[in-house]
Image 1: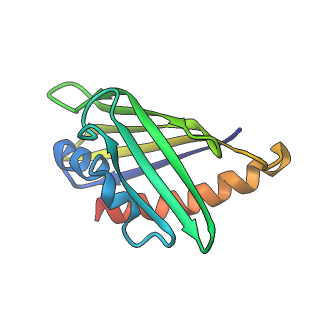
Image 2: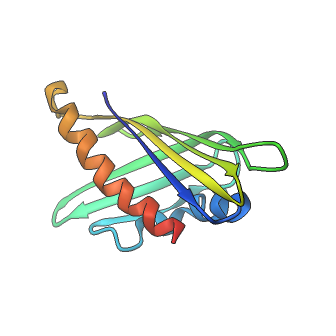
Length: 143
């Protein structure tokens, strides 16, 4: 399984940082070939499903992610969103965390990915690609 962790410090207060990280359609903005939205629920509760849809010409796949844990940040409490990837081509999960630091926040995005048909020896390449792509998304969300 390919694994990577991204950490970013931002001057944004935790509530604003959290709002940006959990506004799911923004995850797909300016990402070629991918759109992200909420397929079930509001995207703000356990059991809701976030859907990333990727299409390049005739090749298409969906990456449905169920929210299995969700705690918004609050006084003395970090924010945590745990997603379980429930699709066929992509399995694994993601964790988004927000914690207050000084006058701002630290955002952490961790992923574990298993892509169907991709051999395990390619996990370092998958992880490096994930760091690059999701790092750009995270940077844009926090701007």
